Amino acid sequence: MADVDLRSDTFTRPTAEMRAAMAAAEVGDDVYGEDPTVNALQDEVAALLGHEAGLFTPTGSMANQIGLQLLVPSGEELLTDADAHVLIYEMGAAAVYGGISSRTWPAVGDALDPELVEGMIRVPGGYDTNATRAIAVEQTHNRTGGTIIPLDTLRRVRALCDRHGLGLHCDGARLWNAHVATGVPLDVYGRLFDSVSVCLSKGLGAPIGSVLVSNRAAIARGRVIRKRLGGGMRQAGIIAAGGLHALRHHIPRLAEDHAHAARLAAALAPAGVVDADAVRTNIVRLDLTKTALDAAGLVAAAREHDVLISPVGPRAVRLVTHMDVDSAGIDHAAEVLLDLLT
Ligand SMILES: *Cc1c(COP(=O)(O)O)cnc(C)c1O
Image (cartoon, rainbow, N blue to C red; front, side, top):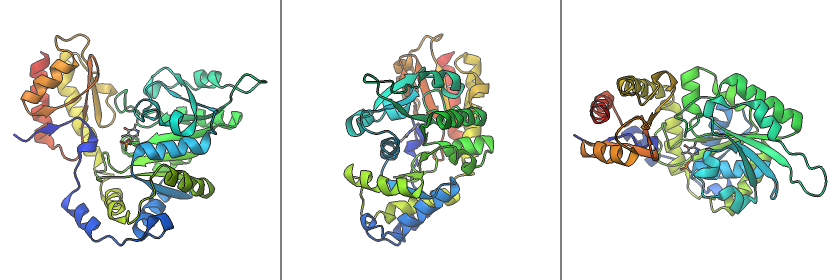
């Protein structure tokens, strides 16, 4: 059978309808702000998230890094989770390009403790302390398995940022998934943050692209940073059209991916590798500490049966559901993995 590719939701390929929309896209030079399709995408994402303006970027990493640079001046400090994508999967960009120093709270995913975070804030007291200027959170939280930080926790983080005059950025690569899983409107999430990045190229199925949203003045400064980073694209409407199509057609269907993840988790729960109740969105993290196979062993054995999964630690793997894996693929993967794990 064809590979069941559960390594990441980045493996989604554009549908025929999406390719048609891309082929037909009206374009212009986006460095001049004249690509109508890019402009429409930016406006649509900003409106959905309750913000004034948006900025199309080639990657989520670039959107995040622009967001961080807008909130944290060079030499000052960011607080985030020890497993945050902005720190561990973006090649040190915050330090290299933003001159941003970072401190982390323990990687707890959705169990983020606002009091602990508040206790970490440093206020310059004299000659020897740089200042905390912003906090970044991730929704959904990738490394802990697509977990969702509760709205109430996020509100408390917003309140502490207000008390201390800090910026708040959300790495919302999968904010769509949190919205579909909880029913919390996108703009209710969006308005909690000074800036939000969202990916079009994950579960939404576009081939390329992310959007950063914020207020108009910040996005104007963000355009300069994007150009400096080499992200000023020309007739980018060709790819933005894929993103617009994804935005208009592929958000509600994320519920199918969540149902598939729940089905996988329920099937694998008897092997003692996953708490099925903890699986909220499209990521299933398997803990292999009590099994005979380590991550590399399970990944290799599964591949023999056309099931592709990713190691995320020596004894942990990740299965990510998405629109290019159907129910038959899910059942095949569940059968293969259960067999290998028991
Ligand atoms: C995928 C992802 C990003 C963006 O990654 P790019 O590959 O740069 O587009 C950002 N944050 C999280 C949590 C992600 O999973």
